[in-house]
View 1 (cartoon, rainbow, N blue to C red):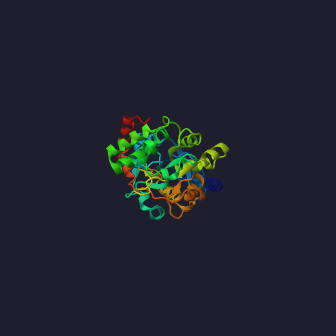
View 2 (view 1 turned 90 degrees about the vertical axis):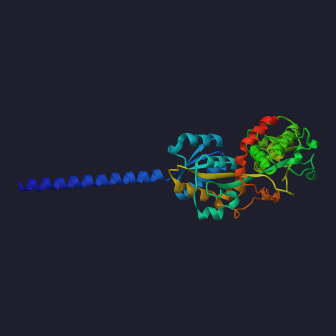
Length: 354
């Protein structure tokens, strides 16, 4: 009986030990799964470039943090954040317009963050003074001109594009596109609503055709003789010149780049920027993500692969960007692009800019 009792107690002890070990393993597994679950950053982005995914993959390799991406237009993403409220899974919002970042901030969709690294890597002009958003790149909105039909000395300012000498010689994309909305918003900020309306009306009168297509389509149309000048973003020309299509390269080579308003306020630029969302479930990861994207390695890729101007002054400018020359940028507060956006849209509708 004593032996039976001894074996019975030993069995109970072994069972208890097994149960304890099993419970510990389960707890360790759950902890590991929880830690793995936390090693993510959820990105809502308007950007749609292959170079971005390369950067996201590099970030994951360096940090172990997985990047989950939702792509849509800035307006759609802002609306999505509003609808999701504090249940939103988003950690960061990326858009290609300072005006949209301003709108997201005003709607309470972004959270102010503090980072010495971001302050070191991004000049003050390219980040929100309160820490709600940070620029990653900037794009210059320039005049692309047919080298065989237009001399650079004929060009000067955005305002001069309303001159009758450009009648039926000018093209650009639709007024529904944020690049043109931001440009008009900047003119409202500098010259007032009435002057801005006069400018928009003058541009419409000089159209060689109704607006259609993207910036690359405008450059191709100039190359084909549809128009002599176009208002475009520089990085689209960079993409054409580095295209795998000989026809696109030829089209890009046929146009020159002119930076307007160098004798006064400077050329209009807009930012591609990012902010941490108000209810970010992985705020620490989000900050690390932004710090990575504004670092020299990532900034070099933005410039070298997508032909955007990096905000980090330590980053390299690729030869193509340098070949267009240095230029004076308009020092406008990017918030103004958001403040005047609705006015710009109403003016476009009034003057018939489709």
